[in-house]
Length: 111
Image (cartoon, rainbow, N blue to C red; front, side, top):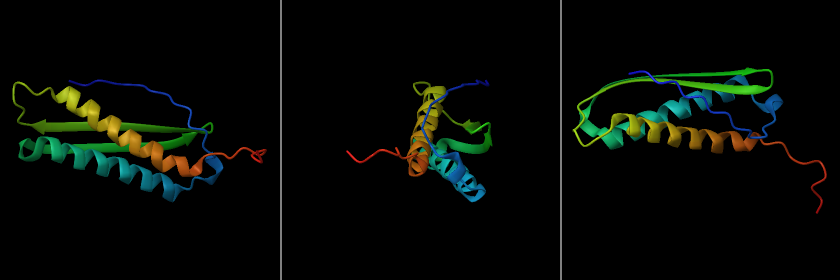
């Protein structure tokens, strides 16, 4: 089963400050979060995981794509789709936190 989700969020980051190294670091962070969370949840039931993270800046917008292939022995009461949704949400929460260091500052912040 393959599902495509599209989500857009305005984070008010200063794209000019983000380097290629930052993008690589962000991709590694997202992949690490996905791998760790799936390992915690599925433990030894996880038999194969391929996570592909793509990040690009186009028209002053950061586009992040995540493609996950998972093979696991899942108990009937477990819903793998829900688990993957939770894991991806967790990874994107960490990505938001990472990107917050690049937020634009208001010029008249003297109050």
